[in-house]
Amino acid sequence: MSAFSQKSWQSKIVVEGSTMSEMTPESFPLVRGALRNTRSFDAALEVILDGDAAGSIRNTAWKDAKDTLSRAVYETWPRLVNEPHFHGRYAELSKDLQDLYNGVLVMGLHDVISTAKKVAKTKATGPAVDAMRAFCDEVLPLSLLVASLKDKVVKGRVASDAPAKPVNPNRIEKTCPCCMRGIAVVRGTMAHHGYQRPGHGWQTASCAGVQFEPLEVSPKGLEYVVRTLRAQLEANQKAFAERATQPEYLLGKRERKGPMERIARGDPLWPRLFSAHVAELEYSIRVLRADLPPLEKMLAEWQPGMGGR
Image (cartoon, rainbow, N blue to C red; front, side, top):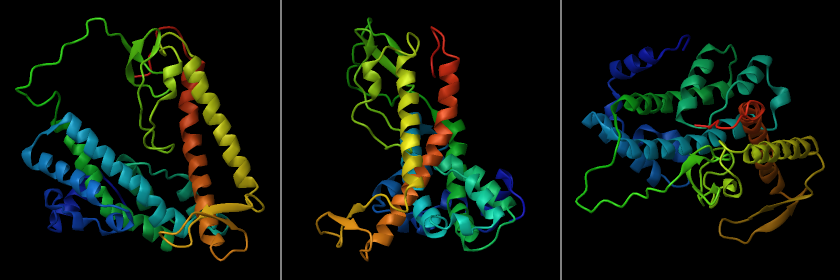
C-alpha cells in the first residue's frame, strides 16, 4: 500500500465484504498460530465483538479485553517478524530496512496503527517487510475496532442486587511512584499492590512502590525506578556487546517435556537458544530506551504535589 489512513483501511475492509463486526477467531491465523494458547485471545475478541454489536461496552470489560489482545500482539510480533527476519542479521540489512526496524516498537494493539503507517511508507522491500505488512493486514482492523469502542465505553459497574460494600471514609489515595497508579496510602507509604508493565514482565506480585511515599510527597520512588531501569539498560547493553563470548551457556530443553539443561556453545541446540537470547536483549534495550526519557523528564521536573496520572 502506498498510503494509509484509518478511513481508507475501514473502507477497504467493508468493500471486501469482511466488516469489523464479522471478525472471527479464524480471521487471525498468524497471531493465533504463534500463540501458545489461544483461549484468552478468543475470549477477549468475543468481548470486543459483542461490544461493537451492542453499541456499548463496560469500561472494565473493554480494558481487560484490550490488555489481553495487546499482550497477544506483544508476544507474537517478535515471533513472526523480529526473530525470523531481523535478529542476528541487522548488519546485513539495507539502510531503509534498518531505519524501519529502528522506528518500529510494537508493544500492543495501538502500536500496530502507527506501524502500519510506517510500513506503508517504507521504500524497503523483501521478506521482512512482507512479514510486517502481513501482520499489520491481519491485526490492524482489530486495532481500529478496539480503538473505536473507546467512544462507546460505559463507565461504572453493572447494577447488582448484592449489598454495596461500605466505603472507607478514611481512605487516602495518591500516586504510586513506581507504577503511576492511584493506590491507597497506608501509614505514609503505598498499600500492597501488584501491577502490569509491558516489556518488563506482564504481572508482578508486588510493586516496588510499597517501599516509598506517594509521588506527590517524595521523588524517592521515582528515583528508584529510573536508577533501576538505567542499570538494567547498561547491563543489557554490556551483555549485547559481549555476546560473541558471553554467556558461556544458556538454559534450555532438548525435548518439550525434558529437564532444563545447561547448553554450551558448540552444542547443536545452541544457535536456537542464542538467537532467542540476543532477540530478548535487543528488544529489552529498545523498550528501556523508550521508557527512560519520559521518566527522567518527570524526575527532573518533580515538585511536591505532582502526581503521575
